[in-house]
Length: 132
Ligand SMILES: [Zn+2]
Image (cartoon, rainbow, N blue to C red; front, side, top):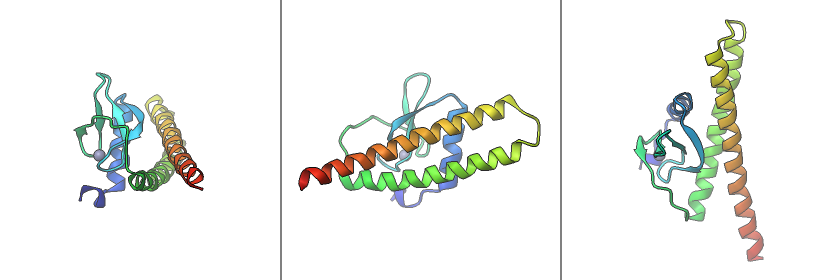
């Protein structure tokens, strides 16, 4: 199962690379591994972790969404610590514009991940409420 052997470090690195290359992070996740999807400048949507193009599907199993949410929380935490690390490591050195851009991009990615997590959580609560 590809989703059982996800290397979080590699995933965070690939996401950071995608951001650096100007890919746009979407509010949808890969159905295989739960990684946020990216849109290339040419419009193609890809999973940077699986390295495959993805066709967006709107319906997902509730359990899957919950799993995805848990993974996203993990990614968010990794990105947060990466960001802290970057800020710590690069501050005393030269104030590189490229580096500032990466920090900005990672911050933006974090915000997007947070939005997805919140959206998935909200959806879950709405479903619960409608059942009672
Ligand atoms: Zn994937």
